[in-house]
Image 1: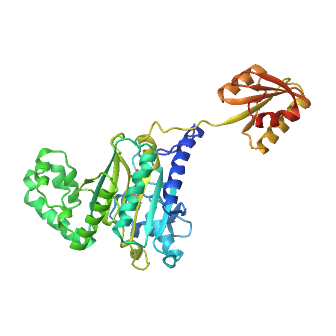
Image 2: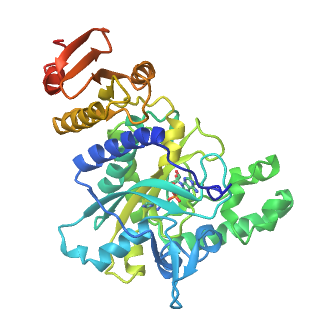
Length: 416
Ligand code: HAM
C-alpha cells in the first residue's frame, strides 16, 4: 500500500469544517483591521530564504526541501511566509501604496523536521505582516489581533511571552559578553552546555540542570543591554499591551528560530499542547526588506500554526452539514422514477436547498436510515414522474404530492 509521506497528513472532509471556522475568524478579525489576503507561490528561489531567514538558522541548514528546477537554479518549498511576502512587496512596488501595507495569508509550508504531534513536514500557518510602519502601535496591534484570533478559536491555556532583541549590533556585542561570562563559569555548567558555548550561548538559558541554572540566574540579559531607542520602543509596546489588558510575561531569553528579527519578538504557547507548545509567534524585521534588495522599510508580523491551534482548541463548536432533502425512489426498477428523482434533486438545488440524490440504489428502508444518519430534514420518495411522497423526518409525517409540488412544499417550511 502506498502511504502519504512521513510528516504529512490528509485533510479529510470531517476535518475541513474546523479549518473553515479558523479561516472565517481570521477573515473577520484581520479583515476588520484592514488586512488584505495575499498568496505567494509554494516554492521560491532558495536564495530568498538563505538571505531572508538566515544561513545559520536550523531552517536553512537542515530543514529546507530544495531542488534543482532542471535549469541549474535552486528552488525551495517555502518553509515560512515572511520572506516571500517581503519579496512580493518589493517585486510589486508596494512601497508606492499608502503605507503601511497590511497583509495576511493562510498557506501551507514545508520543513524537513522530525515529525511528532503538532510538528509536521507540511503544515499550515495563518500569518499577518505589516510593512512600512515602525511604530510601537503596530507591534501592539498585531499582538492584540493574534490574541483575539486565539481567543475566538477557544485555544486553551494560552500564554504570551515577549522580549526585544534590539539591533543586530547590540546582539553581537551581547553574545560576546554572554560567551565570556559562560567561559568564566565553565566549571559550573553541564557538559552539554559547555560544548555549545560558542555555537549558541543563548541555549544555556534553557538548560535544566541546577548548576547551569544557578549560573544563568546571574547571567547578563540582552534586555538590559538594549540601545535607548530600542528600550523606549519596547516600553511603549508594553504600555499599549497593558492598555489593551493583554497579559504577558517578559522573557529575556526568548529566542526565535529566524535571523531577521529586530526589536520586539513574541510567542504564544499553550499548556494544552505537549512538547510542541508554540502556537504562534513573530516579531519585527526592520532590516529584512533592505536585505532583500528593497529600500530600508520597517516590518513586523506573526504566524500561527493551524494544526496547533486546532489541537489546543478541541471543543471548537462545529456546525453539522445541512441536508434539506434526500431524494430517493419507491421502485428501484423504474427508470422513470429515477429520472424524475434526478430532476427533483437538481431543481431543489437550483431553488437554494441542500439536496442529495440517493445514488447507490438502496432499498427504501435503508434510504430512510441513511436520511436519518445524514440528518436530512425531508425525504422525497418519487413514485413516478407524477407522484411523490414527502416525509418530514422530524415529525415523521408523510404526504402525497404531485412531484412538481415537492420543492414549493419544502420552501413553505413545515406546512406539510
Ligand atoms: P515560526 O515560529 O517558525 O515563525 O512558525 C510560526 C508557527 O508555525 C509556530 O508557532 C507553529 O505554530 C507553526 N509551525 C512551525 N513549524 C511547524 C511544523 N513543523 N509543524 C507544525 N506547525 C509548525 C515563522 O514562520 C515566522 N515567519 C513568523 C513571522 C511572521 N515572523 C514575522 N512575521
